[in-house]
Length: 273
Image (cartoon, rainbow, N blue to C red):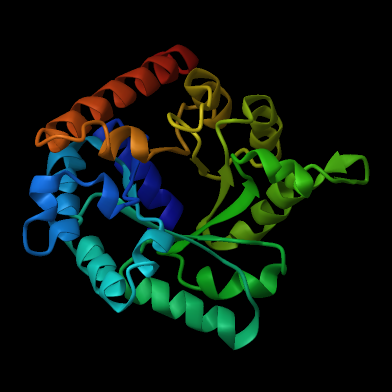
């Protein structure tokens, strides 16, 4: 089964497009947890235990773990290992280099246990190829990111069309093994329509919901495929920091349930059963 087939299977089994971003910050973890041995791992475990039955994926952003030094890499590995079967793991690394450097990036991240990795296509296929050689694992390629300064480069016109559409079309051609997807932010709902038209079969990783102010209804309506699938809707801070108290795990579950229900209402309207 290819990486994208696995995404589709889990979406249907769990009726969920939700991805929880495990972007851990020690200053946001409740004091009682920080007083425990191995506090960040304890926090991650509680979040995973509370939400795993509701989600399609977890997405640790590597920067938050790298900032913790060598202990952060061990923490990241243990966190990925703890995530149960039946959930996609996405390494949000945004890697982009060529030759043996790209090969080593791919080996390092997949050896950590990730199913998918975010990559930057700026250097072309040379920077992506090592990540897509195994059809069971794959990439989400940066296409149109959710930050405001994405306009600095991603909207530049080539042949009368913006760069992000060229990325979408090119990545569709790279998808020979069924393991390529796109990162397309929820803060650009109008553009999502054109990206979906350019890449009708690719799964989209859609950040920007919640703290970044993305339009959830528009993101789901425009970002999913004709079946209301092929999308991974990410929320990080809005879920894992839904409460700063001892009830943080229960609060995370409530927010995950609310987001899943909201997403599925839009999906049902787009593709009635």
